[in-house]
Length: 436
Image 1 (cartoon, helix red, strand yellow):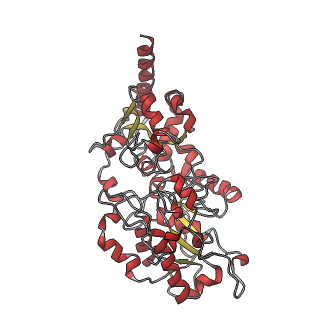
Image 2 (tube, one colour):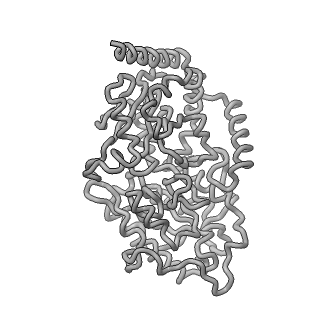
Image 3 (cartoon, one colour):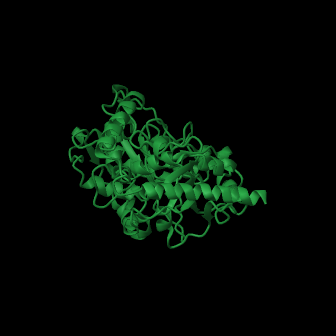
């Protein structure tokens, strides 16, 4: 009886939150005023310049045009276009940023056709476009593909050899970036591909003090289909009647028959299910309904727990649909952290505190929830998380360029003396050294 009353008490609190948010919501109060946005962004810029100079995105409105020039290597189509022709599914999976970044740069005003005036060099490789019949990317050929491409550019152009890649960037959006494995233990064992260790890596994976994240890497959001999400928008004044929402796996029995990473390991998802599967405040399930996008727009909080890796497209979906992201991934490095005020728009819950998730969320005052929702309603927040076609000012493409621009000028120490070599081309697993 006491448990029942406790549950209903929590439900009443949640409904009270939903009522207060609905009652105070209107098209004006849902969005930050232009003045408030301007002040907020100026504060963020001051903070980022003093604390995080040189990493991705000081402010969302920065324009990278005129601040850098990028030379795009023209590689044989076997490294990109032919791979995509073989499997067009690569255009819609969560790792598709590598494809759309290539297309963006080909027509971007930052592109230069004169490599002598370039600040950065980009090698267009679709290293994650190798999918299983069920659509899961296999990273096992990626190291050989990358090595092959670098051997080609280093023998055909002089620019790689000047710095051994320090003025080159690569888009590596796989689970653990350039460690090229979907299981963390094996990714750690592999480490970042040795010949990429001086390059700037643009990757979805981000976790502090992890061997698969180089200092100076640019952490980006995973790809989520902008047109599809836009088509599923519901009226902005729709009441948010769901307190906590999540759809996804709790025990990944398909990829790991023993339960593996989700169930044991760090176990955040399993803890969510075991503690809250019967809690009326939590709308959680493994089923993925056709109304998934609409449901997120009716929810106050959307859970973003780590799975195989700390990141997932749920983070993008939550921001785009104005659902407060509840980030459960210790030490995660979030996309464009200098541009997007994650502490102000999200809720961070330590993995060990998952059993207290209900108490943590119900203790957040309504005015704090309202402020987070208003910040999320800022269109520039949403744009920064998306790779739209055609591109838009301030979108994820531009945030990546902003990150690269802030790393300029390159220090003189990155340029090697004649005959000097730092990278070891023969190190790594023997399978990586085979021709591609």
